[in-house]
Image 1 (cartoon, chains in turn yellow, orange):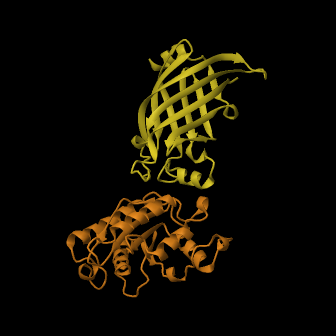
Image 2 (cartoon, rainbow over the protein chains, first blue to last red):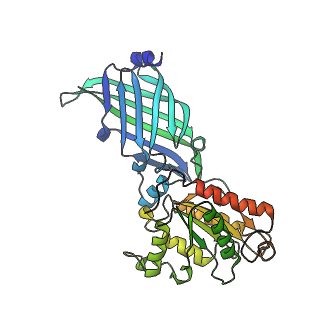
Image 3 (cartoon, chains in turn orange, green):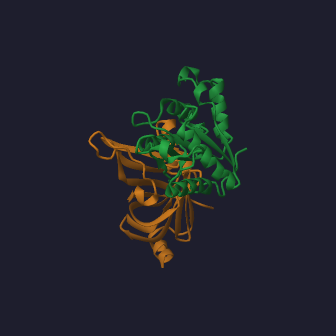
Length: 177
Length: 185
């Protein structure tokens, strides 16, 4: 059922993410603002209505290499033991250009069903003789459900880092020949 | 498998060094090698100006000792409600460079003893935090031996059966972290 729904909502055929022109990242409230990071190595594929995405957590990029090392460590993503995060769509529904995806998000060895809201830019020819379409997807998860429990108290006693993390994905997928 | 023991106390008759040796007996009973690191006193104060190449010889020795172990067991006393300065200083050295530190992903566990009633529980908590920040894989164990001068025998064995069992459990959890993990070169 899920692939049938996906086939109706998403383009047919085989498509692969163009990682140069796509972004996979996260945003989380930290102290007085929103902290953001991205993963530079990821893969997204849509084939026969099945949408799957993975990201290498060791490729996390923030603006400080020391923090990158901390994020890769056991307190956060634990890249040594859980090198990939993944999303497997189970249901995709579409209303106009708005999408709703339900699927399994796996991070640090934990899998949770999540609902993702998004937007689709329908396939169109690109200047290089190919064809591509776009997906902008966003969902918010509780990181502690996935064992990412680090925190530090502010002087007020409140935690410095929010448990709610927004995953932000902006994909361009090119048709595979 | 090889476990390195690091005591946060330099004192000759340290309760923590004795507790560490008792833990070492249990580690060896489990078929792993155990070695006590004895170079803590020679580690200079951390200075980034000196942290070039291998760093000072004592630091290079510490980093090699940690890198060559599959796991590290710390036993710490508590000074002024926190980690002894010499131990914190050594961990600071070992935590550098951040991306390539020998502590990175290293399974570690922390136990402790004090002559006060709380068994260095705050120092242990802070050491776990510091080690986790350094990227170590901190085992979820705790053994706090209070009144160590009364509750440890001369060889560091807890006199209380519950604490003896807790020490055995702590060793078991740390060694359990190594199951399936690559063995240190």
